[in-house]
Amino acid sequence: MNIRGIEFTSDVRYIYAVGKVRGLERYMFDRKILTRMADMSYDEIIKMLPEYEYTVSSEADIYDYESILNDELMRQYQLIRFLVGEGDRHLSVNFDNTDTFNLTSALYLKYDFYNFKLAAKQKILGDTYITESLRPNYSQSGLISSEEIRSVFRDEYYTRYGIRFARTVEDIFTAYDITKDASVIENRFDRLLYTVLREIVTHHNNGFLMYYYRCFFDFYNLKNLYRFQLLHRDMELYRDSYLSGGAVSLTALLNVYNQGPEEVAAAFGYTDYATVLQEGVAQLEATGSLAPMERMMDNFLIDWLKSARLNSFGIEPLLGYVYGKEYEVINLRRILVGRLNNLDGRQIMEGMRISYV
Image (cartoon, rainbow, N blue to C red; front, top):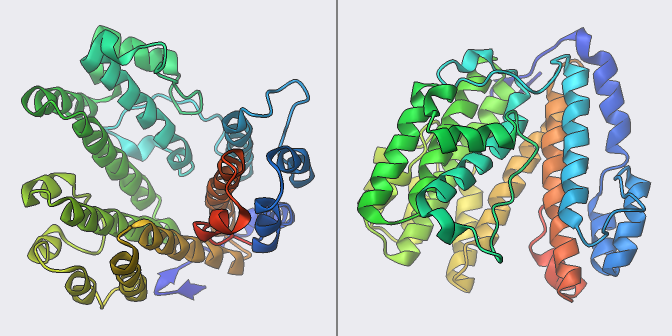
């Protein structure tokens, strides 16, 4: 099967797994269900979640929605690893050799990098970062235990995860000493994370995820360009934030950096997401906010994930399902937070992403 020039896999080994996922898709939230939930009370939403296979313990704090959502994602990740046959998620992590990573490692790595960022901030800012009102809340969902990460930063054993990781950390500390800008922590670790993700999907030659991340990187760079323009930030700072791996080069983006939003969108009218940029810019100029454009970009990515449902003989339906589940959790979080803050259903639904089903 070929979609947008991307060849999907055909492998009968996944027939059972695809059938299992097809059954699970029946428990995902479609637009109608999300709209109904947006008008329900917080407690009513929590009570209905078990009907859709979410685990809500009778002993749990129902207002700790993050634990409920995280537990659901971890359950889905473990299921997909089992169905793909990749075994336990914990492995020896070395970012100098990404060929050793399984394809589903990409699901967990963002949690490790979240912990890296926390540990780096704690190392740089010291006691000022740890207060009663702001305690680092490490994730337990990555490939690496949070205890090990804290030990690595405490002992400054950064080569534990490879030379490339150690150089990234050294670069962060050097840049912070010069700029005193904590955003360098986010930027440098994001760059390494997305480089590693690109290498993993490329190594496994999975065209479905390669296209997904290629668009993701382009959207990341384009959103940053518009954000930097709105904040009147220097072009050199934008250059430093650029992520390679997309279809749009840094040179092409720098060439339009000082142009208006419409001109930027027009310059990339040849891309698959030209309409997203055009409509996003129209909303940006009407509202002054990047939120509508970000939503449209996410919807484009979700629409691509949904194409996996057309394939019955490959790994794509499994990957599409679990990535689609991540977007479902984003939508559910928006509803829960909205209801806790007494937003009405219409306000909540305005920022909702499309559903995978």
